[in-house]
Length: 340
Image 1 (cartoon, helix red, strand yellow):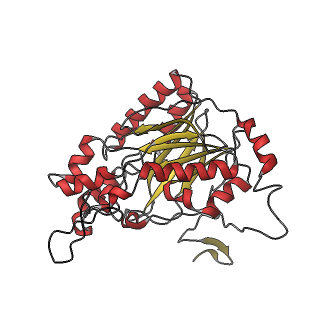
Image 2 (cartoon, helix red, strand yellow; image 1 turned 135 degrees about the vertical axis):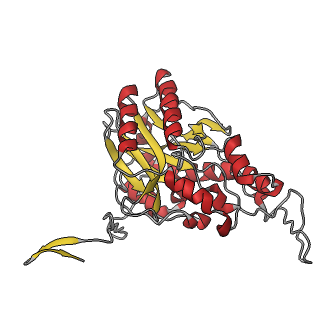
Image 3 (cartoon, helix red, strand yellow; image 1 turned 120 degrees about the horizontal axis):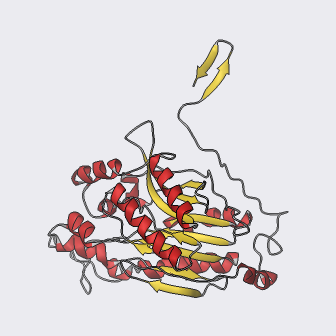
């Protein structure tokens, strides 16, 4: 899925998600995947505005965030159940105990509407740290789902070798990778520009500017690596920017608009050989469909099964702490509850 939310409008974005899930389900989809922070918007302003100019956007993002569990997750479960699909969606999750903490999270609901996986992005990437806290390894596991063994990683986590291996080592067969609507890497750039070090308007052209950062190709590289190494299918979903979001963030600043559109994502589906099955779809709105045969991993793993015969458990081990941290811990003491 490639789709843009209704910018920073949680209720309207939920309505749009419901409509798109219905469209996909009517076409025969059993798994429907939305991109990173689809509900209800990716904080793309972090990459192009000074922190002191971002307060208004951050307040609106916080107001459009959701608590897990909560009424919005109930609605998402109802949507999955009504359309009889497995639903994966990226959200901005708020700490229920404070308005000051948000996480970049991904939720998976089974076809009966039950929330079966709730992940928080391990590390907020670069300027994302202005908005999101680091997450944890809770639910860093594939969901069984009648043999699908469905796992999910968010954006840059798909570059984290140990996070990917953690899913594979638990039997992942079908992988979800979600991505943002853009990734401005160097907003000073103009195609064909040259470096200015004399105090004039900085113009930094290839190979150091955004024209050299191909987000769609980098997504394909990550997805192909995981598909080929793990012998799994990879479904890539992207959140996109619509004209409203672009205008609100960029305003009349052509430089910011160029930065936001220089590196855009692409939705795609890849097979266990690392090759494209569907896509890439580099458009603002669209649904990719593909039939997958999970059994196709068997022959490929005869050569390289990196969590089985092509590994050395006597040499390599990986330890993962899957606890969800809490700043408040309670335990029973001799005089009642002791708060730490």
